[in-house]
Length: 303
Image (cartoon, rainbow, N blue to C red; front, top):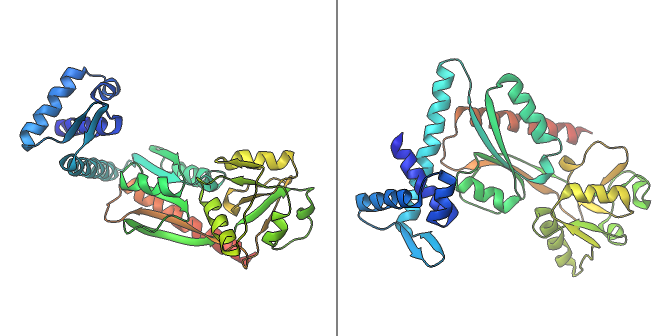
């Protein structure tokens, strides 16, 4: 496996942007790391980095090499997981990128259920929004991604998808909290708003709907944290927007779906990188998660 360690040096320099920072993370001297890179470039017969005043940047040959490195590391993890299966011990690491909307209930419950059966499997859960989650798949930082409204990409292989309504979220005593059933968007806009900021898919979805009507929203608070917005809703008579998966079971909170005529449901997507073979642990967790999402969606539709 020594060649993979050497190739890992290249990947770390690409991440860090400099020999010095990469050497610190790898716990070797900068001069030793420089020699390793020079040896690789000599063997390949071409430079793989651009030497810039502010650091190191991969050139086209380096980009090809890093993609090969990530493929090799992913294949090694898959083989390790399969070998562990042969010995009757399920091991491995599942790397999941997910939107904030799924960290309240879905992801903790599914990780708990999986680890109850396979306690030697570890998890790396990265909370990222739609664009960053897809990027994590393409850079092999994540095995699977669970996101809202990901951007169209030929590199995504969708394992499961469904729709979730956007809900108006308010505290139980709010004027909009009384009647059950959908609420019109114009009624929400008439109240003080605390909204997800423009880094989140929910806000993009809202602004597209408002742009079609030629109107704008004027929130008093914007945040990239859905948890902060929920806590603010409990303290003030503000209205926020979230999807059902991210709303905790809290009697102090009230949620009502936005009328579909005003704001279409958002698409929930569970996906992996197209063409990538997942480790056994990651593939089985993806299967479990897809089946659970299907059950949850069917139960919600039946209510």
